[in-house]
Image (cartoon, rainbow, N blue to C red; front, side, top):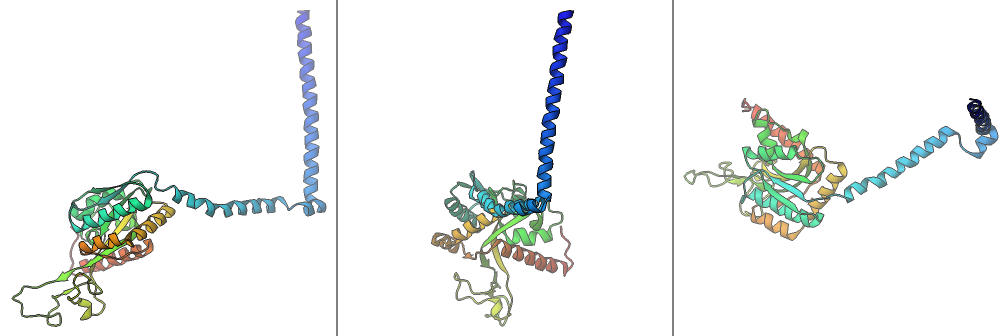
Length: 298
C-alpha cells in the first residue's frame, strides 16, 4: 500500500507539474497573441500591414481572379468517353443523312467515337424524350427539326418533355425549303396567278435555282424546314461552347456541304443563342397558327 501511495503521489505530482507547465505555456501564448493584436491595432501595426478585413478582401479577390483560369479545364477534358447522336427518325431519310454526317465530323474533331442511334416514332418525340432524359454532360446530343421541336409540341397535348425547358440549343446545321405544288390541270402557271408554284424559303434554293420563292411575290414570307443539334438541358456552358465550336467547324468542311446538298439541305450554321431565338420564334408562330382556327392539341 505504501508503495502504491508513493506511486500515486508521484502520479499526482507529475499531473500537477504538467498542469503548471500548461498554464505557463498558455499564458505565454496569450501574452504573444495580445502583443499581436496590440500591434495590429496600433498606428505602427496598421502601417506595417493592412487591417485584417482588408487582407481578407484582397485574398477573396485573388481567389475570384483565378476562377476564369479554371473554367476552361472542364471544357478541355470534354469529351472524356465515346459519345452518342440520337436521330429521332428512321434510317435512310434526309434527317438520317444529316445526323450521321454531323456525328461523323464531330467524332473526328472531338477525338471520340460517336454512335448514331435511330430512335424513331411519334414525329421525333420518342427520340427527343430520350435525349431530354440523358445525363446533362454533353456526351449525348440529338438532332431536332422544325417539325419535331417547334410544330409537334404545339399540336400535341401533354408531351412528357418541353423543347425550351428540357433541351439545350447547340446550333442550327442546315435548312431546306418546302414546295407549294398544284395539279397539272390547274390553269395557273406562275405564282402571281396562284400561290402554289414556288419554294417557301427566304431565297432560291441552289438545288432548284429556276424555281421562284413565295417571298418574291409575298415579301417577308418564309417557311423553311431546318435541322438543329440539341443537348439535354443542364449541360455546363463551357461544354455547350465546345460543342458549338466543333459543330461550326464541322459545317465548314467541304464534305459536309456536299453531303448536305445531296440530301437537298443547305448548310446554315448558328450559335446556341441564335438557335434559342429561332426556336422561341417558331413556337410562337406555329402556336398562333394553331390557335387561330381553334385547333385543339390532341
